[in-house]
Picture 1 (cartoon, rainbow, N blue to C red):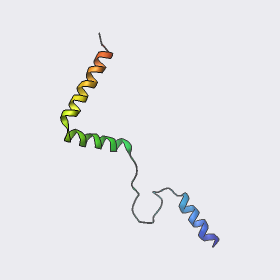
Picture 2: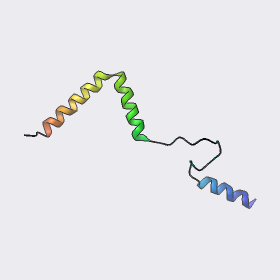
Picture 3: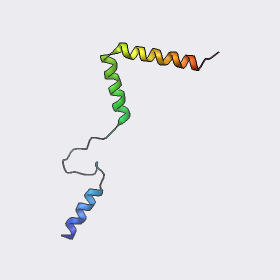
Picture 4: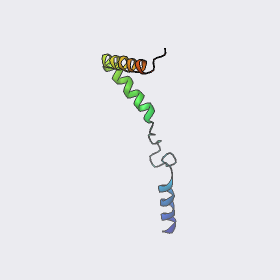
Length: 68
């Protein structure tokens, strides 16, 4: 019984990639990649909105960062 609880504790403390319960690697989180993928999909669906946002951001940055 003691060895069973020890093995359960070691499994609980193991990283998700170390566990071999299902034989598959767990899905890792990558928020930067997910955000970029979401933005690309949105830009493909609504290119006008993205273009206007880019124009607006460029206008504000150009206005505030006057290079002359």
